[in-house]
Image (cartoon, rainbow, N blue to C red):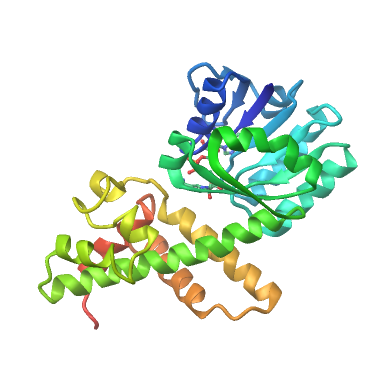
Length: 290
Ligand code: NAD
């Protein structure tokens, strides 16, 4: 299949590489000039989209997605499918869905979970919104780039699932980091803490698969000086999206609100910008109650 891939960053580059490995013909574009082995470089988004049966976008946010979609949709053939894998606000996903419909193009919002490890290993989880026909077009590609794709409902439903998942992720990472910092102050060995919690009722993805303590558990950004991984800035973006959604849906999300405030302080006033979201642990290490 001919595929256009726009946004070849931490996630997009390995996803595009997996499509190539599976035998697809991929043309890619990234404003930062990133190139990926065996992905044909294009000079622009519309050039990457021209003649493609499926165009995949993996971009930083909804504002950029809207700009890219406005350029790319007119370059796409009628009946082609646009699959947005970025994490964006539900309104941007719905607005792009409307624009594609007017242009006779199918659309799926399909944000992912699984991080850069999942992108490289082809084990992402896709949460998808869109019509049955659009989902069916994208599903074989989800099977290459991931291990599971859940069709959550109409356009926007994938983003709704993603921001709920990431609200849990942000809250859980903070809880895991503050528990490690408390354990330190109580004189508990970190490895023992991991051995207990990872097999007890406090276990979670943040503890078991992405442990924020260096040298403990499987390899994670903590072992690489908290280089992202999943940047704290992106976590903050997602927590803002879930709070924005909670406000418009009149949902009570107090833990999500606290997590957003903490990540905002970490990124905007402390040293969290550009670091992995698990760097909350050294932040808590330095602090006392006062
Ligand atoms: P990234 O910043 O590494 O990649 C985004 C890429 O988009 C960059 O290379 C940038 O140059 C490019 N870009 C920006 N504007 C562009 C434009 N107009 N045209 C073409 N390319 C453009 O971010 P990432 O970590 O790859 O994340 C991408 C998306 O996936 C985000 O929405 C993020 O929230 C989501 N996500 C990330 C992770 C993770 O662990 N990193 C996990 C799940 C979801």
